[in-house]
Amino acid sequence: MALGDSFTAGLVAGEPRWADEVARALGPRTRYENLAWVGATSADVEEKQLDQALSLDPDVVTLVCGANDVLESVRPDPAEYATRLARMFARLRSEAPKAEVVTATYPDISRFLDLRPRTRARVEEGMRRFNGACRAVAERHGVALLDSFDDPAAADRDTYAADGFHPSPEGHRRAAAAFLRALRTRFRPTEAAAT
Image: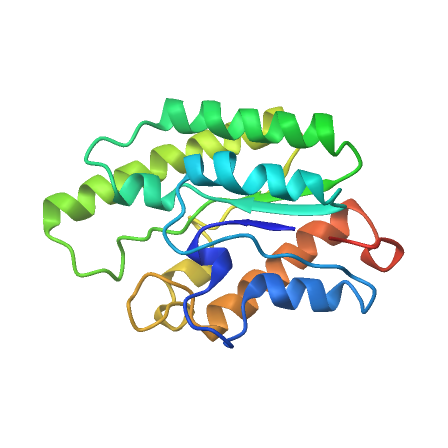
């Protein structure tokens, strides 16, 4: 079960997405749903995606959100984001106790965007604070975390699509490999019928 924003949903229909690659790697018996959509905020994930995900009794859940919270606000609130993320992780732990849950921080999304200096600084600082909140909440709830902010791939322009923000096919390939590594440290995917 993949929840989140355009990082997970992808931008172009038919192009490979990291979540698709993860589902394929988990085996032919894997039942897979990608509920993410372009522009989703953390509130959208909590209010519109999470219930549907839980209703399908998932074995594996990826939940990555927060970038749109930062991009859409001049004063993004990391404390509010942390509270929302904590509620989502708590519900997953309570209502899908056997599910493996994986989240991720974002790379510096301002790096390759055409932004004015003040806006670039605001977005970079917002992502640093949101990523810090994500790390703390994931640790508190025992959720596997991929830390993308300082990953070497985050500084590689080939990782990004032409817009400088969304993952390129290479970015999706790298993300899939990272998510699979995280899952394999938690359980043996071939033994699970993952959703």
